[in-house]
Length: 118
Image (cartoon, rainbow, N blue to C red):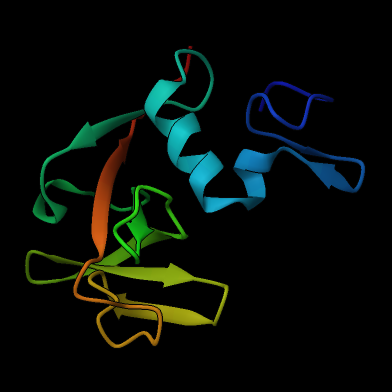
């Protein structure tokens, strides 16, 4: 974790407060895409390229603002299953198409979390 105490920088939680990237889906999306130290990720093209612990970001309205994030926790064949906590979701299909927030305009970004951190 890094960036404390600046809530707009880094990825951290400490002493009852946290960075925006820790709690706001759109901020996490930008952190994962731009981080060059500490927790880092690589954007991948398809859900089938993901592994356990990777992250999917959801833009339900398709307006460029990402509303939700999940963590890959399993697989159904090649399809990732995800967990999330806004509404407790465990081993849910990654598409989230059964969510009331889902719309035909939903866009996804897939992030593979790098295995080693500088």
